[in-house]
Length: 131
Image 1: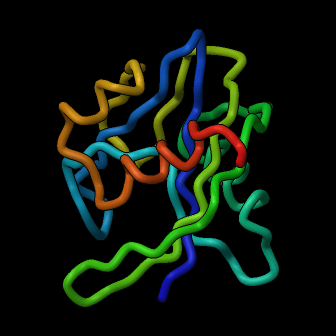
Image 2: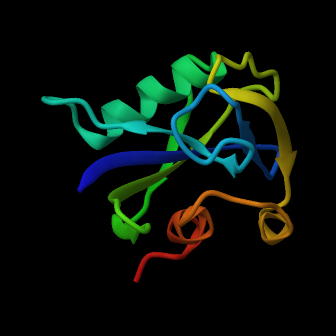
């Protein structure tokens, strides 16, 4: 099982989604949040902030919520996903090689996109009210 983070950026009430490039190892062409593996010795929050910096150029996102982790299983792989949502100080994004496009959407628009497995659940976990 691989431990990963999926981070969303929110700006002016809209959510950032990124279209994965042909250079990534899986789910090329699918829409995703900011995501990546949690390195040894790194907390999920540290990994999420690092990935936001690397994939978007945003240096100072403000944590809004850490969602409850959950498991996603594919044909031969499983991922423990740690979801986060941050407020972004800007809508200006600098993409790295992992993505070829980005757009800011309303949260309910996610259902209209071809997304990586579990992305909808990750966003749901970040948007739900505490119990």
